[in-house]
Amino acid sequence: MDKGRFALPAHVTDWAIAVGVAALLLGTGLSGPPPAGGGELIGALLLAAGGLALAARRRAPLVVLAATGLLAVGYQAAGFEALAVSYLVAVYGAVRAGHRTVALAASLALLVLLQLTALASHDGPARESVGQVRSTIEIAWLIAAFAAGEAVRQAERRADEAERTREETARRRADEERLRIARELHDALTHQISVVTLQSEVAVHVARRRGEQVPEALLAIQEAGREASRELRATLEALRDDDTTPPPGLDHIPHLVKRFHTADLDTTLTIRGHPHAVPAAVGRTAYRIVQESLTNVTRHAAATTASVLIDHRPDALAIRVDDNGTATLHSAQTPGLGLLGMHERVAALGGRLRTEPRHAGGFTVQAELPVNGAT
Image (cartoon, rainbow, N blue to C red):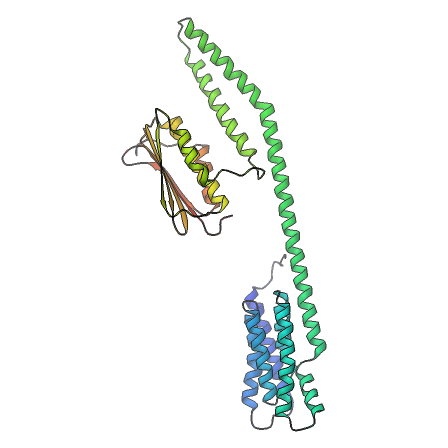
């Protein structure tokens, strides 16, 4: 639920309530007649402890429920007559946390225990002992605490459901917008790029058949058209990648590495550690890293070998892709959209990515993706 700008932290609020209830109990208990038998100090300590225990009601609602109930029995046995406000607050907290049955059973047990304590410590008639119990805990206040806790729990549950509904609606609208953009890109660009590429290839083919020198500009147009077609297909594939079909993940990497294996490029895959299930987002990111890395190897590296290493660690998934291409430590590297996309994917998962030339020549891509907390 939305909090105000100047809302206090939860632990500060809990301590403020605990201190306030402790002061209320002490004031109520000490304002009455002193207990017989000299148990005033012990009773005061039990009253204060009953209030201060509420500071932990969010972290351990059932423990606080039991503690406040037993402390109420204790200060009643010590001779203090004070409404068990701390127990009522603990009941509210337990019901709000969803422990309705436990709170009901504990309250019934407390009523019986208070009655037995009153009978054992009071020498008068039984009617007076019943009145002493009512001064410690009122049934009406107990029902009110139950009702308040349940009402807040239901309100918070409805707020959570409304938040999930808003997120699902936003996700659905984003998917629809992504598909619309994909259709627009396809209709507006694919045909024109295909025409440019086809015309340039025909012109190059005709020039070569005639034995004429192909102009560098024409070759540049041909290569740019092919590159634009590949990039556009990749973009459309990413835009159309939705939840209707299972996204590629770790299980698809062996097939991906095999697909890049050609007569000019020897690709190998090594898997270390004990393979275990990883979050879907981690699997998708690992697949995209390997895919983009091997794509860059085939396009730009002029490499003959490329190795892929998948290392399953207890708290992370490590990916490493090395090639023996032409990159050197002194060569200028201008990160393209593919590398930037990899950095963004890894950063979104809270991982780390290194992309740099190797000391022995070639290029390396190293990623470490945490497997705890990724969705």
